[in-house]
Amino acid sequence: MSNLAYDSERDVQHAQARDIADMHALRPVPRISIHAFCETDGIAVPIQRAGEDRRMAKTHLSVHMGGMQAAVEFYQSSPTPNLIIVESRAEPRQLMASLGTLAEFCDPSTKVVVVGHYNDVALYRDLIRAGISEYIVAPVSLADIVGVISNIFVDPEAEPIGRSIAFIGAKGGVGSSTIAHNVAWAMSTLFSSEVLVADLDLAFGTANINFDQDPAQGMAEAVFSPERMDEVYLDRLLAQCAERLSLLAAPSTLDRVYDFEANAFAQIIETAQRSTPLLVLDVPHVWTAWSKQTLVQADEIVITATPELANLRNTKNMVDMLKKLRPNDAPPKLVINQAGVPKRTEIAVADFSEPLGISPMSVIPFDPQLFGNAANNGRMLGEMEGKNPISLAINDIAHILTGRSEIKVKSKPGISGILGKLNLKKKK
Image (cartoon, rainbow, N blue to C red; front, side):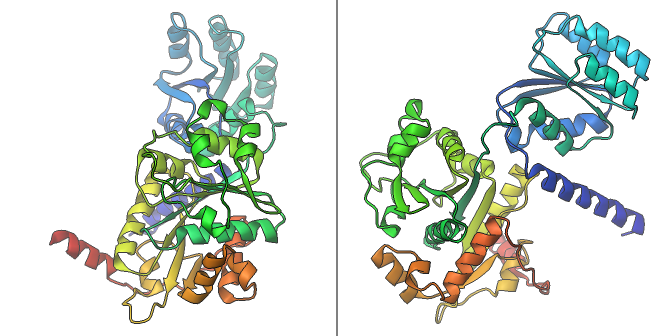
């Protein structure tokens, strides 16, 4: 690879990293319609990418080429949307004149954002006086577009939205729920923060057992009564597990089947995020429309896996898919659980993480006595043995997921050949 190509690839990677960092703090945009009229691909592409971002999931965005002239012609026979984004390479005087023509066809409530190619303070002031919501100078990034839209339509005085963290196992039985519940308890006790655990495994959920709770109501009432869902109703369904830890428990019964549409849990999650700063989603090991949508919309995803080949295959499939579905977010985080089971052939941690391109947040050793005692007593690991290295590892995970510390990246391992094994299995 030439130095020029290497530098270009590195610049793209740096730009993507900046986008992810800038997007991290942005809030979801409400349900609005957006029309964009562009003159160049350099503006059309980031706007199109913005429309595919999870924070813009409620919006309806359409991108047209042709710039200002195309917008004027379009709205002569069509109503205007909530927001128009229009790119213009015209010089300032001509730009002001063409905006005046566009204004003749715009509804008074329509917001307009102009993407221009002149970095002119006087032009900016003239545009703002003319009623333009924002003027940004090309080139623009995906984060610039989403940030501008968010600034216009999201109330800056609105209550902050809680952070959602989705836990899912690479296979059933890897301990994802146990890790999720213990991390939630650790966050509530370490940081004196309100935490809500939502058990989404309605048939076989274990949160009620792990927290020694038997609530009469919970997740089933929430998901089957979406018309009643608000902060007051949600609060009635919660079980109090600790001073700052609440649980929306699964019924864990087979009285009915639990088939849901893609957005079945969306309203519950949105309501919970308005009520608590930290929401832990215990997602079962299934791949359905609703589980996929729940993972895509989560602020953070944690995959728990044991160091075995099937777990590696499943983890890689999930990581690759989630990177495609969430291109503007950091990749999922990884916890390797039940490491060191006696007489079990295991994949070394370095060999497990290399094909994933992810360093695990934590490697938790196999300790059936500690976990068994905690489960049988309906208590968390930190309550049973707060100084145990596994309890301390759970605390470290809580610090990482709340942004209080970073993952310690070890030196890269050599080529493992694990992917080769997976490919050979596929060919057979």
